[in-house]
Image 1 (tube, helix red, strand yellow):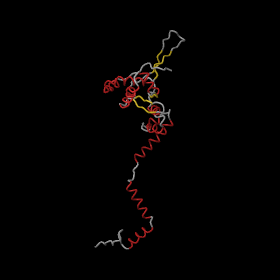
Image 2: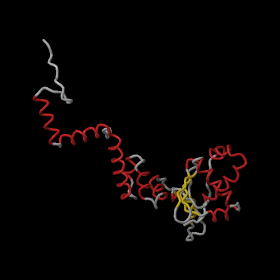
Image 3: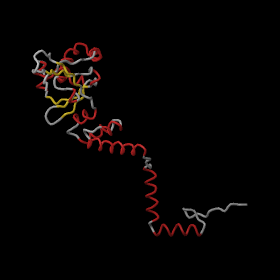
Amino acid sequence: MLKTRGFLHLTYKLYHYLDKLGERKATCLCVYLALLKYAWKKNDYVCHIRHSTLEKDTMLSRPTIKRCLDTLETLNVIKSVRGKSGKTYAVNDKFLKEEKAMIVNNDLSNVNKRAILEETTYQYNNINKIIGMYRSDKDRMILELAKLPLSDLKEDTNNVYYCKLAIQKKEELAREKNTTYVSSDKILSALKKIGKMSNPRYREKVEFNKRNNLDYKGNPIAKDKD
């Protein structure tokens, strides 16, 4: 298996998207490229890395690296999740062109044969990306998976368990959205009425008023004239 990329295409969409950063653009691009050294397409561009590693690769100071990472995350170029040791970073692949890993196949049985380049592509999968990002926080993982289209969750065959939980969460959220809640005033009023009716003396008073045609204050109720 290759341990280094043959090539990686960055789009000018990202290059010009960072124009707004001014002189910080160069350092942010440097840190971004360092992340891509570890965030491969086969892992859905997710990697777990320490600042010390980025410091060694970029030769930038740690405060500069931290500022660049924060800036890239603010611009939605990357996303991060803090773990017990370091952070997990996910690269927004909308700024990347489809990557193809180049594998050289040498057939030594025939010296006249030239090396053949075989292109293998890896299918991008949002489900794997979310699982990689939130592996240490199962509840958050299921909540994020539940935001994906139902068809994607049903068709995935690599993460059946998590997809099943996500579908259940999706159905639960849909039920909550359609639930009509009774106002707290109505609930308190009903409880107050139940409390009164459970009092024997109150029930006797109500019956007495009805028999004697009295209102709730004990005053006679005027009869309607023809």
